[in-house]
Amino acid sequence: MATQKIPNLFVVGSMKSGSNTLYNYLDEHPEIFMTKRPLKEPRYFVKEMNWSKGRDWYLSLFEAADKESILGEASQHYSWIPHYTGVVERIAEFSPEARILYIMRDPVARTISHYWWDVQWSNEGRDMLSAIQSMKHFTNVSNYAMQLKPYIDLFGRDRVMAITVEELTDNTVETLQQIFKWLEVDSSFVPEKLNRRDNVSPKVIQKTIGSSLFSHLRGTPLWKTIKQLVPESMREKIRDVLVRPTERDLTMLEPTRDYLRPIQQQQTEELSQLLGRQFPEWKTLYNVKA
Image (cartoon, rainbow, N blue to C red):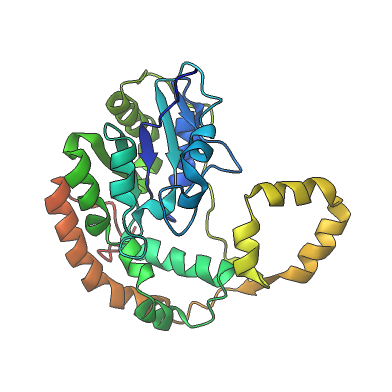
């Protein structure tokens, strides 16, 4: 019987912080195997999502791995405390020697980007400030200290690495070398497609009718089957009906930033104490003009 391949790297977020770009860089490395699309984000350890599919289903995602020393996956919902609980404990029980990689973004910018994502995909219809004040998931996901501390407590500081998308963007090669060295793989490897930015927020949102259902379908095997069976011309007609461009309403942008800054500056102080570093690259948080 073949030995089961157990993942030992988890990219746990944060949402809207460059995790797709980081995934692509990791996936290019010859010593790293990452789960492939359409299951790039297995979300297995979230009980409300794919936990019920079971261990065999999850491990099947790594069957194609060959001689890679690092087997990884990237699921943004692994850092959604307190909305999804027990995730850290399940990962630790499943793979106690795993490494945890976490990418962060200026929390004010991330929170606002998360709002725009919900406008596009989750039928969020309120203005920016009202939505962010009412729905705590926007700011909770940006509370990086709260998300990271349980991982550090269970895995140890040396097995948890936190970077920012700003340093990955500004110093790509150096940051990747640090990650690869930490993973104990060839740190001289340079991905072919450097500085590619994925999922950049557009000025005009393609807002989808019935977007909650649509967002759950995208990236699933069923969606892949639909794309294979339905001609492109027909898909374009369906897209024209379901998707309509919507201009971003920026009226509440500055009031929202002003609301978020004192909250998230305090949270960033806690993060700095946790990680032993500062975050001068977060210009929006500190209201520094670029």
